Image (cartoon, rainbow over all chains, first blue to last red):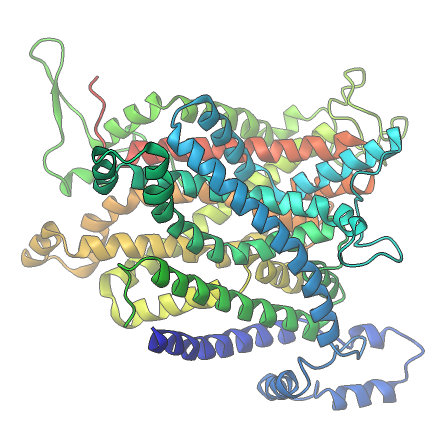
Length: 321
Length: 316
């Protein structure tokens, strides 16, 4: 097991190196960060020249990549080429906010999805089953941005018509409110609902399928034949095994979740890492975009690794060697 | 991707399988049916798929014949009716936007854009994925290794972020440039499916037999293996249309996909965000996307059931 983990981590280093170089090559060859500065009449040619030399923009891309890499390790992802501010504080701040939203929405999605999946499988082809099947199919087909927008419009209207504030529709906090306040919950409530819906649809379908898989297996029939009470069969024999694929699915869902976060945070103007990425992309702030790509790449690799490890721990049939 | 139909003589599926099934019908007459006939019969048994197909014909038909269906030009402003709600009076079925453009017409033209992007991306990424997946699955070795490493690279980066970055830097808001970028990012999924199928087909006896008979690699791949992968390719290709339409809408909504003046459903939805009081600006383009995607998913489901040669439930 330990060799497996070490090997996976060692393997992910070249993968990260190649993907970072490719993204760097691609991002830097397509965007010119000093174009904006050149358009500003208050900045002299001399200053621009100094900036170009200081940030090595006059060098070839592989050389710039090397300087960038040095910055990433020695100066925590380095400075922005547009604002000359360090990137790291922005990343940690926004990532924290995104983490809060994602953790709450994923927990809710997992709890609800697993519960609905279990009941749909036990009562297969019942009204409950059909109702939630339709709900999750709609969940798959509804574009995230549209759903977010509908909720935003709905709650803006509720506020305007009845002057009731259930959820705020943009921003992260009212002035003077903290990270763990009712005010914060009212702000992140709608983003949480949006992100939760997509994940919920996925998890409930997977849970239902894997429950049905297990329910029809031989050892479940044996357990029933032995006279084990039905609820015990379900909780002890079926659910335990049916939950294993959910672990993998939820870990592999992480990349899609980050994509959903980009859209949701942009709609609700939430100061998360997805919104940060969109703003930096609009400003063609190359190193900030690179920082986002690298941070998310590391996170995705970590989550994939965790999924593999958990799978091995939970399912003794899987052996890594 | 063309629909599988019995009219066009298919790439000969019967070569791969034993003689096509024959069913005794009405007395002693024997009717020979090809795999495609069975597939078509199974597809037409699938009620949801038929509903989906009908829906697609209506929606995409409106897009294709946008010139005739749309009552107004999508770019002409009607200054007497700014931000009017949906009304039959002036044929503003979906209302108008803030400079008085007819929203129904814009949605209809947006459908055409979505259709073009969806079909183009699905076809290009299917062909790319088919060729690369087939080579990787058949030869294994270096090509296979490179393919799997590329897939690894794609899997480490958040898809949407890569797409948005690529589109921001290279897309210029142009519909076709965006489609090329999307196709270039989407082929890996199909390539992996095809690789899997080719890996398992490579070991089949009939491939061995063809080899023994002296058939070349290209011939084996094209005549013997390819027909057996058409099922997954068609199903994946159909679903890729829906995926491409959804992703295009999301990217255009965020401002990194197709930019005005080309009407696109995602970009139309984003106009709703600037006027949250005018609900029709958000509801109609979004609802159109949902309907398109649901219909395509139904058709994809039907095709999956119809093209799986393991199933031969139909006794008709």
